[in-house]
Length: 299
Image (cartoon, rainbow, N blue to C red):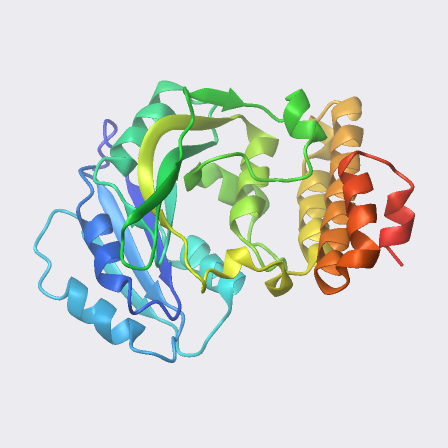
């Protein structure tokens, strides 16, 4: 029988070429205090020793959490890998995402579940964090001053050129997955899932530190060259159009403009990295909202 006080939550920990960080990451996941937790540890067929270290780290675990260990037969890539875990292996009503080099603090899942249960309208919860280096030493923090609800029609959100919502340690309701289905060839999962959640309800940003976020030279998210702006923008537009009928027309139009602005800024950002002298001035103008730059950036 399902426990209505402690509904099933799933913590997904996805690895790829992160053997140096596996032990810390696994310890953080297994150390969660939430009593009804399923943890999926999955390696995307890393060419190094990631899976061997992972397998050893979870062997003999006798704690309260259900542990699922997965290794893909061949490398799938970030989004297909996450799709497989979200739609094929996860059973929880609430889904928590954890990078293979990040460390969740013991009370992370419990804290985020309290927010979900306190407000049924909240579709996603993110949290504050501290940054650590390769050796696990603290290098900084990303701490909100207080808890806040971010809504789709928030003026600052609409005017920004990003689809992130602040904070890390993303957790979402499974109903978000059910509404939109698998992600396509968009190359990034976190901002897409955040945007999907925002299309259905507010995101709560917690001031509580929930995660140690590891920043190092091998972070794929630190290099824009790994991503296709047009593919990501196409996913945003597809998801927006999927719920168009439920949105006020004015809000829909503003979100379409936001996607265009995101595309404009990112394309210029890509170009200025290869030719700073030519494209840096245009990038600076675009950040100020000059629409004509979009025509130049699309050439």
